[in-house]
Each structure stands twice: as structure tokens, then as C-alpha cells.
Image 1 (cartoon, rainbow, N blue to C red):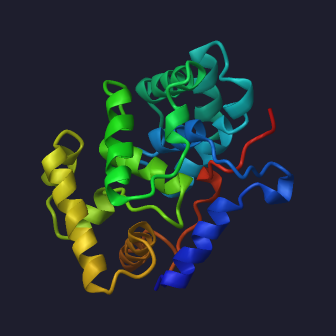
Image 2 (image 1 turned 90 degrees about the vertical axis):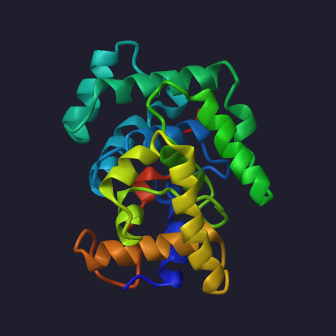
Length: 236
């Protein structure tokens, strides 16, 4: 089963993705992290990775002018499970980046309160564009996997904690439900002695559950998130 050292290695792989192709950047792209996260909804990890790989080259050169063209690229070369709303979110995130609204989110928070503020402020900025608290938390995790203090509470987290499917669906609209489940994961982490950071410990537990139910391969390592890395994008 997945170990904490396996989670640390997986985090390192995200933070150093692109080195082999000369496309690694010390500063991760908030835009690319949000794109990858927006494309994660209701998808298996491999499909999410393939779709993120399609949009990665546009991080520095801009998305295609025609939304239908981008939709076709992602669906044909990434994965066909894609909605028009997801594509619309990609363009909205790009617009936020171009007008400077994402710049303040490029610095990693330093306190727990700052992590929560980072999430809520970004979630407010993305309101009405298909981005949930889980997605914003996932973007934070992709940006800083070795230090993240937020938990992307997806359906696997809810299932592992024996929360209902109804509660999971409601969590995208209910701040109270989401924070309650995130707090349950934090309580587990504290009871375990607070090893490393909350996000990493959660990743280990998330992978252990997924391995137990046959969603990801069994082993010490957590399933790779390299294709989702915001550190891997072309030079400007």
C-alpha cells in the first residue's frame, strides 16, 4: 500500500516534471494548475492527465481563438469526456491571468489561515465558472504538493470516511459540509502525529484507499500526477 515516502516521491515528481524535456520552471503556473483542476471533475486520473497534457502548450502562447477548436483538441487527443462548461472555464481562467487577477495567488501561503484565505479568495474570483472548493484545493495541491495544508475532498475522500454520496455532491455547494469533511482528515492527521504536511499525508491515505478498492495500482508509490504538473510548460 502507498507509503508516506511514496507520497513524497510523487510530490517530487510533480515539482520536477518537465526537466527531461527542458520545460521545467521553478515558478509553477497558477493558470495551468487551475486548468488541470478544472478538467479533473468526474474523471479518472489518467484521463485528467491526458487532457491537461493537451492544454499545457497553451500556457505561454494562449488558448486557440475558437473554443470549438480547443474542445476538439482536448476530446480527440486527451479524452472525449469533456463538457462545454469545462472549456469555458479554461478561457475564463486565461482571461483572469491576462488581466492580472491571478498574480497574487502565485505565492505559497505561509500560515494555515493564509491557506484558507488563499482558497476562499480564489474560489470567490472563480464563482459561477464551474470551480468548486475541491477544485481550488486541488490546484493548490498541484502548485505546492510538498507543503499544501488544504485537502481536495473528492468522492474517494468521502467514501473513505463513510460519508454519503449525497453529502459528496452537496459539498460542491455547501461550505459547511466541505469544511467538516476536511476537518475529519485533519483530525486523522493530528492523531497520527502530524507527519510532514497535511496535504502529503492525505495523498498517502487517498492512494491507500484507491489501491484498496482497485482504482490505482497497488504499491508503495502514489499514482503519478506528473501530467498535471504546473511546473511543466513551454518557455514564453
